[in-house]
Image 1: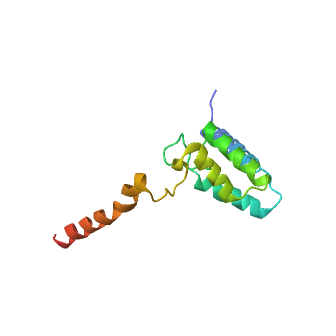
Image 2: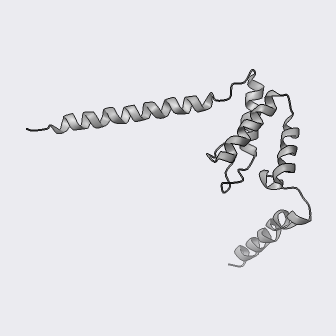
Image 3: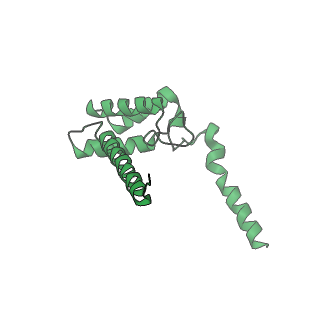
Length: 133
């Protein structure tokens, strides 16, 4: 009994197309998970989930994360938007509940002074080093 190589390649190719089709369907389903009445609310939702940092993942937004907490926060943001809350109200709640770490824009205060001011001497030092090379 001889198996032709072309037949095996055809089977492998058909399996690949099935897998790609499943991935396409799953991604389309995920995109429609939260239906919105208006395009503005949908835009606000995607903007907010890209601006809120995942507390479980390392430097990943909750929009990009698959962590359970990120899923819960996405659902909460969706519910708040549907309820009519403003972006500022949602962000303020998240900061009061989880701290300023949820924001990619830390406030300018004593605890974050190093984050804000460190780039200045580092840039000057880099300029000085390259000037004298």
